[in-house]
Image 1 (cartoon, rainbow over the protein chains, first blue to last red):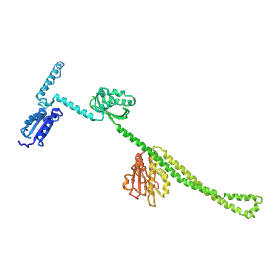
Image 2 (cartoon, chains in turn green, blue):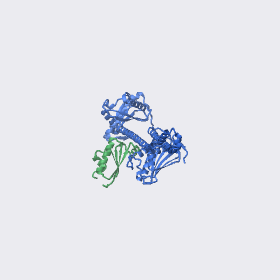
Image 3 (cartoon, rainbow over the protein chains, first blue to last red):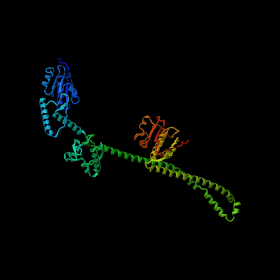
Image 4 (cartoon, rainbow over the protein chains, first blue to last red):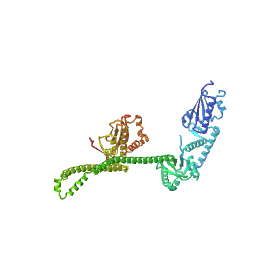
Length: 95
Length: 482
């Protein structure tokens, strides 16, 4: 995996709920600290686009999906524990 | 296949508690599985379930947002339920209640707003009744909005508020929002504007009265000169009258009463008496003619003074009500008021009345505009060096409007001054005060017309046009004069 590869994330949230808001804040901080200028985050609100969540096989919010680089990964929750999240995303030792 | 079962009384009592138990257990299990980090779960059909904890968070979050919006408003806002009881108020409402020592029952929460309005006494009683009626009407779904401005004099301070009431939801009756906005500042500005307007009107009236007085003094002064001349002529005539000579003849005739025939035929003095008497008759006749002429002049001049006084008095005491006026006559009246000064400065007046409209209008306002325009034209001519000074008064018009143009061949107006000429305080004359044209333009506007100016520049003269609308009942048109 190239160290300079661009990370594409999709975060499924449910409106203004607390866990969803926390997940958004944590993901933004994580990207700022570990992937500056090489990440894209797409937010999908299941209240606004329920069919899309269903099609993507998302059954809980908040859920983060790492779309690129491969392999694809899903993480459910607020992303508040940085280390397990970085490991799950394959980011240990990248930044 | 879905089978819909309606609950039966027997099963409801047992089933519902059991179902709630299952629901709570399910939620509890879901919370445990997701470590409290999940807000929603979705079924296999994609239906999203908001977990109870998230539901509460969301409701609180929404309520906080709504409260923040309401608290940010400077208006005093309260929510009423369907019975008119205050169920919630914003910060501004609380602050007002605190400032005015209305601490009763948590700034009014729980009070029936309708009863509070019904109970209002004193100055605000009528407003209170009106507000109560409006709120009742809104709560009953009979009206969608109501506003009223009212005075509120709390803590010896005068305040004005705009009260508004609207239903919480238009489609069903579940309460209303009442709002009081402090509009004191706006009202104060309005009131001071009205005061300034009144003062301006008084100033305008005083200026108008001064103008009338000046007109009277000026015109009467001119006539008094002529009166004085006539009186002096008559006095001189009387002083040097040949009537005294007649007395001498009478004395001679009396002395010779006994021999009157001889005296008249033989005495050298007596012989010339018939001839002398003939000459005396001629002289006295001449004197009589001169004095009679001067007396006529005197009478005419005194009549003229009476006319001037009557005319000025007529205009000075006239109220601002519409009356039927023949415009050419009005223009002639205005001209007469300035005739003395125009004649003294050798200014020729050309009258070109192409139509003789009869309009219903406020005569007082129009005459003031016209006098002002004619005087200004006179000044413009007077200040010009040219010998053939002239003012042209023209009346033209169509079905819609009548135009009175007062033109002069005087000093003209610089292009940069054309746009400022109607401004208050703007004048190019040393002794002008910049009020006449400003006031005239306002008066023209009040008459539904307009006052405009045209000048080709310095020393090229100027024309002021007063346009007045036709169409009021009673407006007619006469035939053009030659």
